[in-house]
Amino acid sequence: MPAVSVIIPTYNRSQLVKEACQSVLRQTFADFEVIVVDDGSTDGTSSVIRQIEDSRVKYLYKDNGGQSSARNLGLVSATGEYVAFLDSDDLWPPRYLATLAAQLGANKEYGAAYTRVIELRPDGTKRELSAPERCRSGWITKYFFGGMPCLMPSATFFRRSVWSDVFWDEALRRGTDYDVFLRISTKTQFLFVPDAFVIKRGVPDSLSNQPDPIGPLNTARTLERFYFHFQGDKYVSRQAANRKMSHAYRKAAGISRSLGDKPAAILFLKEAVRWYPLDVRLYLDLLIAALRSTGCNRASSWEIPKPLPPHITVSQKRGLSAI
Image (spheres, helix red, strand yellow):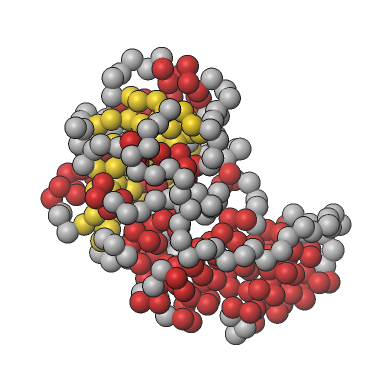
């Protein structure tokens, strides 16, 4: 049994996922398995991965169902004492696994460790996305709910026992990280390790680079479910929760307005006011949205999304055999 199971979900990223795999194979810590979960790619990902001549690399294919379903299939296939996720857009420096495994091995009270995030832009320049001075160790739910930086799947290392009753919510196509980290943060303490980092490559067609209000809308729905159904009120005050949900709707409104969808912007701003009517900025935003024409207003099909159900949607159950 390997010490670490590295799960790499991918979809139509044949060259990038190959480079991500190679960054794992170059680790100074060698006791691992790499589980590449292909979420229905059509770009030859299968042949690219099968060309990697290393018995530690396993390739699983599934019909397209989203990144969460790919990560879940990786989880049910993992056998290591530790679990690490690596998105196909990202890279690990050679001592990443050694550093994180040593830290969790020496700090038994923590179930997860997380690191800094460095963005590598297409022009070769780098910038730090994390704010190390704001990153905390311990029980972080309250701080993470409020927007603590750094936490992302590729930069977090877990004991596999943490995932004994946790899955990624497959109903969420975007905003999944925030949801799962909130839930895990109530189960275990997180250790911040500033000596390690992850390289996040700036890929132009990445979902995170495409303006879409569904991201902040899913954040709002995640916050609402966590607070009202997953006992989030034990960790966060009602005022803090209302302000955070209002902020998410305000962000969705800003994206909608930038896309020329004034009706959606107004709809989301009204929802933001409903959650936190004391924020005077919202009324100014409403006035601007109502009066200002972007010159490209389009018919809006948006409605306020229904609240997430008080359960996690998972199709990949434990013990399921992979294709």
